[in-house]
Length: 252
Length: 340
Image (cartoon, rainbow over all chains, first blue to last red; front, side, top):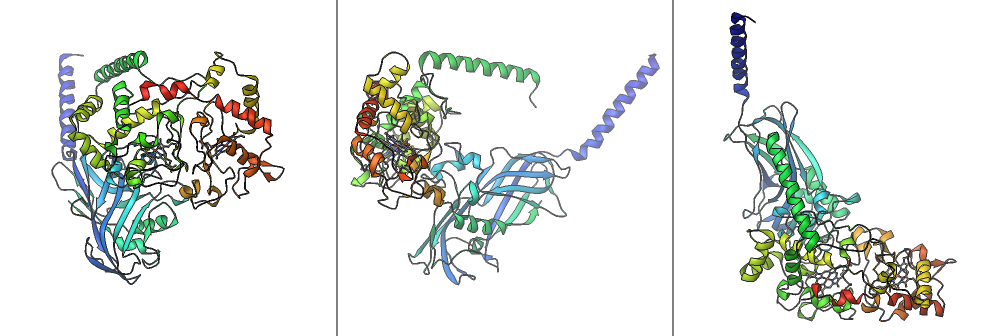
């Protein structure tokens, strides 16, 4: 190679390097946090849901006041525009209607990108139901693990009702195996606008969940006010609840 | 991405770490068992077995601090002298003198056990203690409260830090420590074992008893652990609404099935069966030969010519009992390593 050629060669290399930098620039987004917020609404009117407030269930025609309403969400993944998935490690949450807890699922360190879908599991996967003592939100000390029949209580709904013979209702729904397995994985598409993750830029996914749907195909409280084990009732109540959870909008 | 160099170093650090740990555990402390035992079901996983972890578990096991009113410890219902069954009572007494509806089982060779409780409802040794601790008639306590009681106790607080590092006490550490203690309770030094190891011989009656046992009992009470851990119905008369395995699976076919108990140390653990209904081995053997009632889920192995029951002559029974006596492990029940 003569000298001129050498210079030319390097010049090309440098410009190629520069231009590729330029091309990349608009694409480089910084990692950031994604929040999935669950807004709880009541019945078909989607009126405000909150604990310690008397609500009427239109289908049952019964009154109920919740003291506890919480459930597990786990294994959250985000699908990017290019079809790749970001899977959150150690992804377990208790979504709690009580403001003392949290109705938010927070995913830190999501790679900067544009995302089109979110996938999550309602409930806890069978692996964690059979792997012994866990920590964090899966700590059995959270009161969401059955001591006598190992497995997580995936939905806990408790409260009072004048229509219940005992005056109370207690639903601990779960079961991770067999025909009454409760946990399900669902994917939600965000539609036209993608969720942009870029550093401090706000990235929120808003979901709507409707606790009234627990009784979409279940007995009235006057008939059945408690169920605290894995069975067909747990299966039915949880699936009608999970099925009605929907994506509402993103905040970006 | 971690560079190759760092990965390489990490790899060596890991190997080095493991080899260190191995050296320590092998020379000093670990789960040991005869070569005719199968591989333990519980492999400890993230719960690294150490002498200090085991000793912490032992301290917790004997400490009533785990109960709501500090009156009942695990050892109240699981006594070493009885191979960790209760003190020969049918139904154990928990807090405030309350009793449950099942007999407190013996505890040994738990590292081999895939499921726990008479109904097999508990699937892991680490979460096993949650049941007695939170049960209202046993210890009536809450894991968070125990964690805070232990944190306020300077001696425990120090011991937890030594075993699990400088972090707040969580239920997992309590479960890990108890799992270490429970897993180490290996019973493998009965006369039967010394016979298996060629160190001692059986008398003629014991030898005959072993043959009868292998013919009539071993399909469920399988050697060398003397249980196959399956859930079965052995033809006990139904006395209450305890559905056993059926309570867990809700299947008609599982109703009134209970976990096959190990017969190691059986002479020491009376009374017998899930509700402690039989006080003597004679009663148990009479049950198998003539006391069985028919039940839809009665195990087919226990039918003879279409009738419930298995043939056992009087001499068979005498010899069977002689054999069952060789399953008592006096080394185990007096081992100071397992004592308070």
